Image (tube, rainbow, N blue to C red):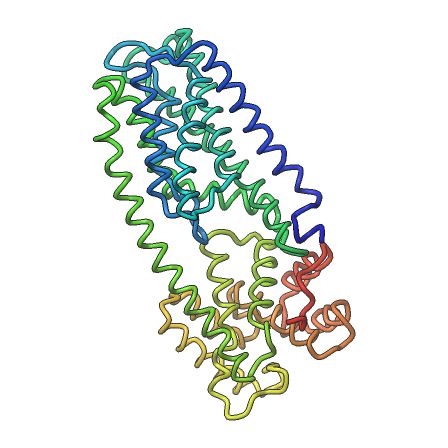
Length: 428
């Protein structure tokens, strides 16, 4: 029950993030209400930019880091805004937070009316990261300290860029914390190492994150020169990026659904036990994280684990329990090669097909992903055969480290299971 509802050791992280964001939002709103809105025209421009970015977003899909880049860029631009058409601004850090919070709240109303879910954790992250950027930038700019450090010339853009880099790191730390907490709520054994998640978040900054940050800084500098009309021109390319990212995600989602359906085909046809492909994919992903795989390499591993048994459809009669390890080596390789040929036709990519094709090779000749799939698949098969439970299955895998299984992979599997493991193999 505790794992089902995410009530566990990491639940306080979510409460702390949301609580800090709520407290910061209340302080900013109260201060802005008491002292009044400075430069309401600029506040309206950036508020509309953030709200419109939230409204046009589709929602987070699998693997998508930032479904509202226009809103994120607008919020960052307001936090890093010093001048408007050559005149210093006076809005301050707390007003930046207040405007972003109000814009997000206003955008949530029509989204909720249309049945689209509001992501509270994402909203809290944005409030905290934008607040961090504003607190780092606005006081130093208003006091003139930034100008004394960087000068009022070509070196000055280094100041907002430095603040942007620190803000990106702050956001990555928060995102990794929330992702780990969400993984803990997903069930026992789903808990990946925090360092691996943090590396994923930092690497993700090299994609859309760079476009968001660059657009935010350029928009702030553009308003400093041209005034409030600059965002309408400078944020256009980011809107096109958002549309392109949406189409790419739709293609990737379709590909993932195709692989999931094919993976179930072996179960429906009676070649593998129910839930086998799902269990192997989940446990292989956890082991891959334990061994330091991140980003695209982890995705390849997950997809290959889902599809690792598709070649069994070539058999006239199913193998008992789907355990092909008992077949002759030549037959195992034939099944693996046929499975790779099927994968190549799904659009999953040659990397996934290569892992499926090589899962029957001696482990010293395999890539790491194939070694993981081979070991986790054998573990699930052994547990399904009722050999004495997970400990007995691990013992048999350790006995096979001379030829069949890489010792480091088996030990990583043991560490994952020692933290609570995934749903016991064979549970369906």
